[in-house]
Length: 353
Ligand code: GDP
Image: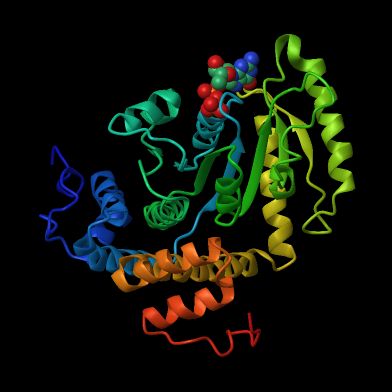
């Protein structure tokens, strides 16, 4: 299998492969990496003809009930995400774990060469038979990219990976999306030059279960420690999401493998706490439910945009609203009527807009 038929022509009506969902999942469960890659390509495919099989594969994968520890890692470009993930992954593999790395980066237009790009970014990890690195889907809306990443996560879990690291670039919305699909969320920051607290404004810190100041090596050590102390103080002012877990701040060096054992120990400790509090499953259930709602919203919007009547009504009403000739509320009624959903009497929560 030299080229993937599903990738080569997105408009192709039928997948060339006639493998059934069971065949896919049996191969994935048995550690067949080529089938795992093909299954991921299948769930990423935008061709409606692939959707049924993709859904069946996901259902069969879910039946295995295999799950891993899902770790989100965020940080601005250059903070050292790939260096740190490469080293952390190598450390975990040395302990006997299998590690998958997925990326969420809707801003990136990395195409064709992205796989190579991500593999060179994590040079050692990509060579390990116990690691699996999958770059961000190359295009799509945040919702689309998020969905593909979640589904890919389910597939790598079925393949028996113990730790799934989801990496995202520090762009507000993608961080929220990743925080909503992982068990623990780690923010990587740089040793600061002054009192500017990066990430506080953007709300990244509120999402973080652990904050790690990277590049705490060489001349940077003192500065990194000061930055860590500043963050610890700043975090003390926010109310933690779980009262029992005040997000800790530590210094690490991904490059020199310093503090990564401590980072991992904190991740394990956090998971043990969630388990003890009985929160691990309920958080995942909450995330699955939020995802369902988000997908319904996404799908409805996609369906709406496919309706010529809907788009026409939206354009007309939009002009009228802009001109101050129609209230947005009235416009919504008209647009919904145009697609046959009638005027809204009451919305689901009984609130009349
Ligand atoms: P990413 O964009 O967040 O994935 O960052 P990279 O891992 O590509 O690292 C960006 C740059 O920072 C590279 O030149 C790395 O060599 C360097 N770097 C990464 N981690 C460390 C670290 O712990 N210490 C030092 N001194 N440099 C680092």
